Image (spheres, rainbow, N blue to C red):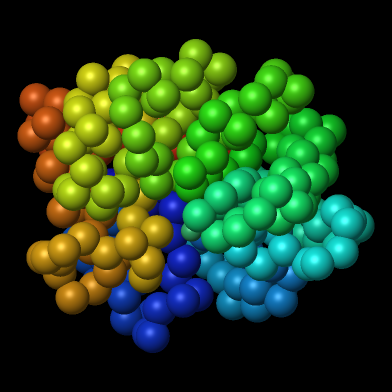
Length: 249
Ligand SMILES: [Zn+2]
């Protein structure tokens, strides 16, 4: 079955119906990243007993507290519920940072959370927008940390820079509209690619399906075609990649 390595079912209008329809279409597991403390608690309560949903926890760069980095809430959440599969989504979004101080604030929070991932040996889900070079240089401080650059957008050479560090890249609907990203994913090593939707965000235009979770099939079709592999090969390879990275299911 397909695995969606990054989506937000807690943001869907009717998660139960959407998940049931996606499951009937052959998608069997979903990684649900965290964004901020209230969301962690809500998603934990709602989905922690659902064996199809695998939860991550982290301070998303869009929702950072204005205070200096403080990972105590994150640490206590990690202690409280041992089922978390990853730290994330954390990272840098320089599209929303309007000045150097805001960029630094994001970097401070990102670095503090990477230190937690290193200490607890957790994989990381990274949100990187207009910030790949900076993310790469911060990751140098944590050579033992592995993870995925979610919804990677960029050229082949930049993708390779992450893969050289042992990282994976999340392939979402951006390959449908960005030729350079499509080219990157066509040529990357097969064991470094995860499929994802980021549903309900980042929908393809036009979307073939009403249910955003089914966007995975539309992206998979394009990726299989670009790489010259069958859908079954792609399904098996990307599922293996997700299980290798997150390990807990
Ligand atoms: Zn996301």
